[in-house]
Length: 233
Image (cartoon, rainbow, N blue to C red):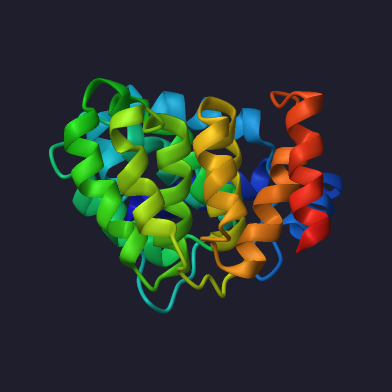
């Protein structure tokens, strides 16, 4: 750890909330948690963005013997996505080793808003992640796609990438299911046929049907059709 990282860790421990620590630990099993609420983390990250040299040091790799806490990684994700840096993709690729569970991955994706103005550049980075065996990269590809790449010109490539792919990691599979549910909202006829033909891995297929049924964006008539698919299995 460098001095900036050490100072941040000490600060975070002073800001811990024991009640929130218990709650956050349950949501993030297997991840080291301090117990600092998200609004505080966002404020800290915002302040670091005003000091880009310090912020860049903060997103430096941790040593292999020092596993970072969730809150440190949350701040790092915000900084990686928002700093004016030329090696953003390189930083993201390294950051994948820390992406455990869903919360951190989804935060990073949500923060990468510059993708909206650089769709072709980001698509070239995101799309190959669908072929990865790394659950973190698979979840990242799915969530980035549902956030930024649901335009029709990407649709066939998306469906090709996820068709019959076996997802053994729960969060990766749920990410793809969520993506399919969002695509169903925009392209109900095409995605209905895709689901009817069972082009998804069985677990992901079931998860996608449930995500569609849970969506408030889907009409009652459409949900009836999805329930019929679900009952047929």
